[in-house]
Structures are given as structure tokens and as C-alpha cells.
Image (tube, rainbow, N blue to C red; front, side, top):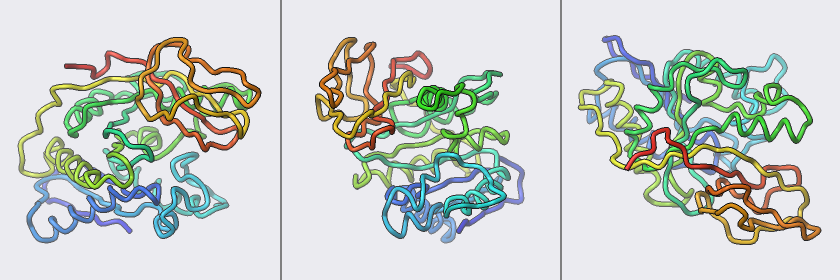
Length: 309
């Protein structure tokens, strides 16, 4: 279900998604709060168009699971022959995204940690994710109310998938395409906001603040544009390491954005072979319970983009 509000005055066309993954409900709660405020008149659209989707994946949401039959946020594209539940959602969602200009996708994560924003690539004409609206994404990322920004997702994911499949990275782009990547592919721009740990009671407030700040930044409501974050840590995903065997183990109880030094032990393969950090950076998206052949963890480096304070 989606709810759309349209102002008689021209402006940006924004869409906000919640529960792309069914166990990530902070966005759902925040979007329902915004719907209530718009319906009561506590918020009012003064220009443009706003579409709100509280629950993007109803099957996954109903079962409070990450996925319905597969991960909606991978291989997202319309399908002429839908094979699973998420293919049917994609056939509804992709045209809806294409009718908008800006996407804010609200997520949460498993381990404790601070909220962060994921933005797309810098402007480029390359084969992975050509793009020309980086400035708009960066301006909004600085105003969502978080202090960490992560980029490099699709190029890093595609390189890992290519290594796994023995294929060129450009041919693996579809595997890493989710809501924001699809939005960019049809001419829009987009941010993913990871609002905190799944059960963090503050996560719905983080999501709500981000929606309101986005509305203000785009001037869809009568409010001043938000101030830029005084401090922001900029990071770029550079490497993904797969789990080779079910018995591969981490050396520590890693959490996203834990720092590592070059040569530090991260884990061991099932045969005892150590896995060391190839450079100084941060562990991102560690998944100790990953299946063999899946992404085990990512590594990110500090990056000047958006870095301040």
C-alpha cells in the first residue's frame, strides 16, 4: 500500500519506503506517524508530491523476517515472468519509483550501533553505476541527523560477486541492485538511512526526523532547510570477504564500524588459515552466521567525501 499527497504547487517528487526488509520496522512506524500528522494537518505539503510506503514487503513484514521468499533489495527489476513473491513486488515497486525523483529508504541493522547514511557514487560515466546527481545526495546526507556516511556499495558488491562467479564486475551489477540503485538507474537520486539496531527504541525517531528533514530540505513543507551536520565521518566500502566454509569463525565479536589496523586478525578459516585486515579501516556488515559462499564481512576506508569535523 502506498499513500500519496500532492500539492497544487510544483516541486520535487519524493518517495519514502519502510520495511523493504520485514524485520526492520522503524521506518514503518515513522512513516505512519508522518501519515497521521499529514492527515491531521500537523504537517502540510506546500509543494511537490510525497508518496509514503509504510510496508514495502508485506510477506516479510507479516512474518517479521528479513525476506519473504528472497531479498527484495537485491536483483530489483521488473520481471515479465515473476518467479517469487518479491518479483511481484518489484513489478509494482519499480514503476512507482520511476514516477518519482527522490527516494529515502529507511532500514535498521542487527548489531548495536549508531545510525548512518548510505549514498551512491560520485558523478561518473563508468560501467558500474553512471551518475550525475551526487551533489544532491551529499547535501541531503548532511542534513538527515546522523554522523556517518558510507559510499561505494555497488562497486564493492559487484567486485565481490564477480570474484565469486568468475565474471566481469559490470556483469554482476544486477545482483547488487536494490531500491536506491534502481532509483538512480531510472534518472532519480536516493539515500538509504540505517536508523540503528532493529529494536533500538530511538530508531523510529531517527527515521521520523530524517523524513521531516528531507521534506524541509526539498522545500515540500514550509520549514527552513536543516543545518548541515557539524561532524561527519566519511567512509568508502573497499573490500568484501566471503565465508568459504560454515566453520569459518571471527576472532572477535565484530560490530559494524569497529576499527581494524593493517594486518590485524579478523577471523580464521575452518582449516586454521588466518584472515588478516589488508589495510587500516573499519569492519562493516559482519555476519558471523553467514552461509558458505555468502558475504562474511566488508571493509571500509576513511574517505574525504563528506568527512568533516
